[in-house]
Image (cartoon, rainbow, N blue to C red; front, side, top):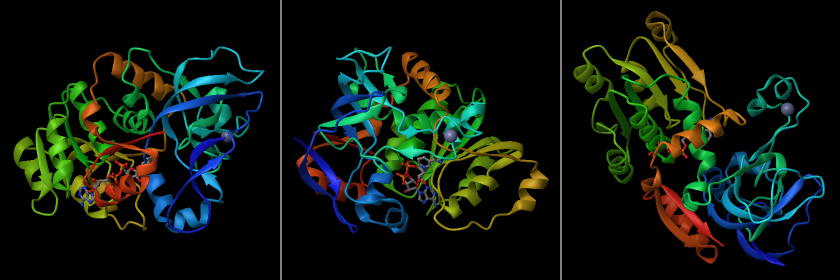
Length: 340
Ligand code: NAD
Ligand code: ZN
């Protein structure tokens, strides 16, 4: 038996319960979880929003961001060893659809998500498809291993553009926006403008290397960017899912600029499309992580010295999960780890 944080009934909350250690399929490995990280998705499931109500079928062990060690190999698994320190891509792709067969598995038609559609990793052990395992360096920080999934989102969004020498605007300084600040700094951006409405997160953006941190409630991001650059920014990374942030981010751009849209808008967005046309902007929708192109880019960025450790602000034991979720709901944190 093992401890697991499960959604037992359709409704708010989670339960720390004793369940059986999962048995693995021949193409899976059993991982002993050493560190887990809480994602916004886990918080949605905990709070039980409309998306969760439509998607989650209890009982379900939640969580998908982790570092762990392989303790058992399915009989068909090759290329992995017991004892390996690993994390995993949490999207299990079908391998058969048009997208999977054209190297675009990140937009698979029949994706299953760890901790959403199948049992996840807020547990002492988890069964994970071997093809999704990403081995970690033994001498790396295991806490950074546990945040590869959201860091990969940031890499996917940021590396859609050459950031070197560019004026980059990042709207939203949640964990993923903060990763973008660090990536833009490492890539040699000329100036980084970051915005949020939360002082705690704005302070972290400064720490990670943003040159200008704007409180979107108090100051006019677009006016500041135009004043500093004289022409407008070259790139917008939209990491908030806020309509106001998108509008001010687009206003901050020069003509011919490019945009990555990663933040998810809970409602339909009215936007100034004529502005996009007359400014000749290029908009990129960013979904998940390219499998595994983004992972290799992330590994390279980390090996070259990318330091995202300041984004990890809190650690809790599994039994303190209520406190951890309350802190996540308060917004006075960035990445929160759960230790089994
Ligand atoms: P988060 O909710 O922690 O961060 C969003 C930040 O935006 C918060 O700090 C919030 O204070 C800030 N914000 C709110 N209003 C703002 C405004 N007007 N101006 C500037 N900032 C504002 O989320 P996260 O985990 O960092 O993820 C970022 C976004 O990306 C979320 O919307 C999330 O749902 C989405 N997401 C998308 C994908 C994808 O595949 N596209 C994957 C993961 C997450
Ligand atoms: Zn597919």
